[in-house]
Image (cartoon, rainbow, N blue to C red):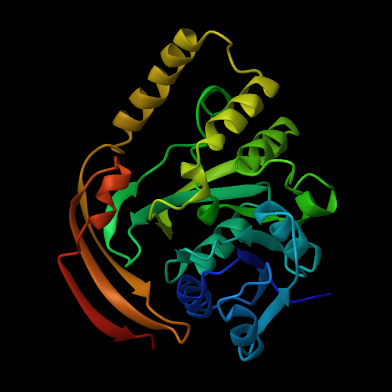
Length: 296
């Protein structure tokens, strides 16, 4: 029986600078047994050679049919109790895996957890704070997925049962399809009201691709979305009210550590008066103060 608790899949292609920071954020986790499964799509930027030099990484460089296929390939190699994926432009905040492990151990009935996250530009500077509410099928089926993939963790039994496999026929919204399928199975999904990850945004994210909207709409209709879009807007008023009552729209200050290399070396970042809304033009956001910090 393996003692690995977390299996983290990272799909990557020609993003070595971002990948180093992502790897650093995983290496910086303490108090948990983990494996980091790197799936490189034959990058031409030096990634394959760099991966060969990295101790502790379970890395494969081979052709794949896209990000979701790469994640599935990684999970096929996984040995852990809890599965997740972290894209190369994302990071776990220090202490995230220990927090998630404690939650899963205290709630054996829970199959999936997700949390809140920091939206940051390519240098780790904060753009927004996304504080979420519990998963509601009605909201997700009629609008967008309010669960950022970097904050989602699954029990292994979902993979073993065949539910967790991403549908790689989708190029941009397979995570939405995955969550709605898992929810339809009766699996228990819970929200942890803590910041778990940093979501990097620079305008090249798959979620910003024009085809994303078409895929998402196809998935909505497959899972019972209202066909009348005016009625959908009325349904989503409930989500806005719930978020307002939970304080999700208010501005807040935050201090966090951002991995700047694979060591990891961290940078402390202070953000003030950050709300939950952002636009792509906001990626030039700035931090109030930064200083190098070695992880002890």
